[in-house]
Image (cartoon, rainbow, N blue to C red; front, side, top):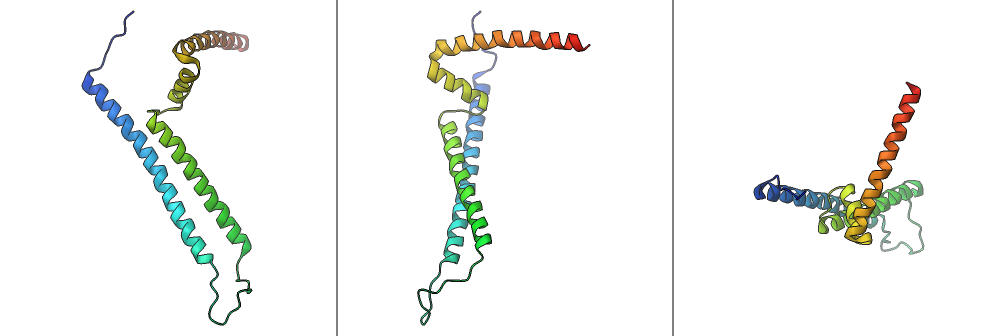
Amino acid sequence: TPFKITKSIEELASEYKERRRTEMLRFMGVSLFTLVIARYTYTSIQARKYVPKLFEGNQKIPPSAYKSESMSALGLGTGLALGSFGMLVYGTCWCNDILTPKEFSFKIRRAILGEQGAKDLELKHQELFKTEQQDIDEFKKMFD
């Protein structure tokens, strides 16, 4: 059967624009989160820096609470790592026009296996899903 277009060009264009807008907003949100965490990390590092006064020795250990500083450093480091990773993921998805995990798996399969290999794998999965559904139906019959 030939492929039939059921939507108009205007509908398809508006859906595409909405997809791209969603992808952009996700990336911008993660970028904003990363920038806020980076700024907070910078100010907290500047606040902890020990600058001796005129007659204080350089060897003096500044007073600090090690437990709270280590927890703060762990939290800020985690925030920076998550923000950077999120920017990488959402930026890549934005560039490759990927909106959902299902689209991601489809595009990865198509990139690795090629177009025909992806179709063959899809048919194989459909056969597995049919046998899996038959097994589920048999279990339901046993327990009814």
